[in-house]
Image 1 (cartoon, rainbow, N blue to C red):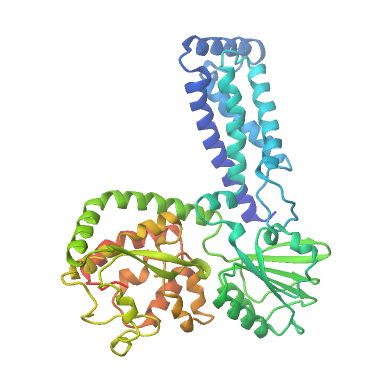
Image 2: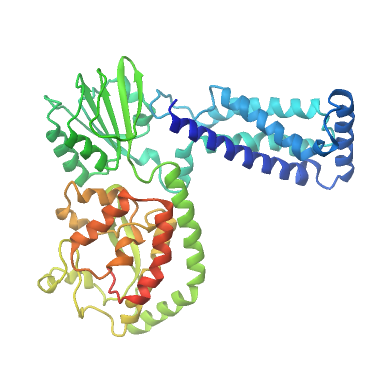
Length: 479
């Protein structure tokens, strides 16, 4: 096990110790004993009697129910961690279609046996049997859900079974198709490359597929290749996707980066997970997005009502409109905005292309004739973007990320631009707090790549805090 894996295990242990101990103490006080005050006295008296008989060197300060419960949770977690059926989900292991129930049963048996033994040994006799039965189910269920970040991601909007992969020189009946990493994802296509060391051909196929389909994972069977060239390594890293390399030989890399490796079926597997927002990182970001979005929608309710009425009396319905935009990994979605242009204005885009003063896929016009009269202040303060918090709640957008563009702008995509699609699009981003009115798409791209390369929760908070200042400081015309 690598140092990073050990650190993850330790941090997860600490988290479980704190959360399970806190909940166990709360549940014990609120339900297992509840209003039965004499029950506390009975248990404490039993503990004091056992102390006098078996461990008289322990002072009265440590004879507390909360301390015994905390120690019990600690010992249970030690047993759980040493078992083979509770470990971090290993995407490089072979798997069967094992459901949550199959994962739940062994943890339930271990927890129930441990809990009932603890209560019997230390004579915690005054507890509710009904609530105790429920408690034997709650903790194992929590542990199963926490073990599998994929399940939590699914609840928050990113389902691993909706992800796709492409492969190179991987036989249809290959045993590696049974890897967890591949089994729960959909295979789009397997490319047969005669000369697998022709890395440019691999890059070309990836790019062409990426423009048409959502690609989350790339699998390359290298056969007897022993090393990759530096440019191909950099390309794989810059994909910001999950990459699995399979080789009969030991690979040596030119660049320094983090990867996982294991040996299966006389093959060496090298797993590079450079998916920026995946697993625990995605979960944390989504929880923050959901919390802030709900808060903002509540705070901005008066502004939403005013804007709704203003547009209605100025230009009638619809008030909100939906635009098809490109989201995470090229997945199209309907983005909500307050309508600030006259009806069917987007259909005039081609007719007005000659006076478009933006570059690349950007489309903005000074003094746009399609705007509703008097709507300028709504666009100036980005009020028309507020409904996009609904897209955030749906998991289609994030509060912070690159601005989503139109599907017809695919013609501008290249191997560098594709990287924009590997993070959730956002309401605000580095561009919005720096050069929100720029005419140059290259500057958009620069800030988007800077965001992807340096993404962190801290950076998201920094951008969110800086956004109001940027809105009131600079006039914006929206996009």
